[in-house]
Image (cartoon, rainbow, N blue to C red; front, side, top):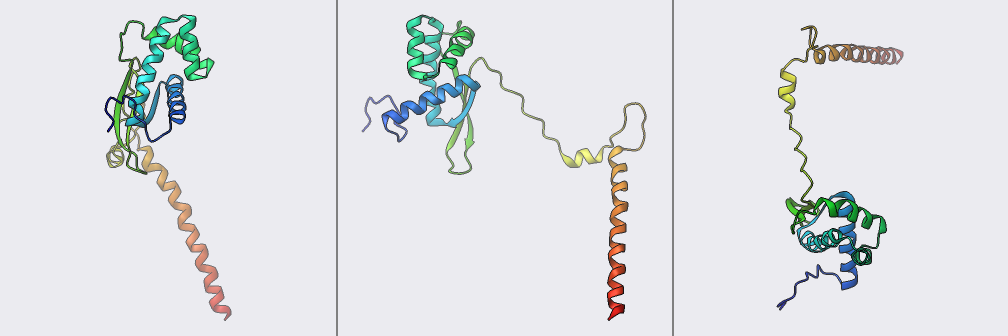
Length: 177
């Protein structure tokens, strides 16, 4: 039984788990949003929130603690310069986890983890191809013939010539025999 065990092992040994979580936190700092499994996202949230807490303090000791965990000095600079100031007015909850469904390969439950200061982009509007074909596309200055209908006529003419050229040599072969 796992009584009072706060850390999810994720099926990994401690050294591998620590390195993987540090790399995920580095990716989160670098890209502001990562997609991973829900279990990993919940573990990354703990360490990412600790890193922001260190960045908010900004002392040399806290910077060295962050470098000891992350092992990438350029990301620690970004953490202390940008993210620490961005979350200076918050007292916790620096990340959000958004569930996005299952991964097609192994059906693992996936999630997006991101900083709370980021804004989600609006989803792209889905356009129906049949609806687009039904309404004519016209020029803004003149209500002329739709552009979409004019282009297929020009492309249809060369296709009609090619089959006629292929039939003529076939008759010559039949006459030669």
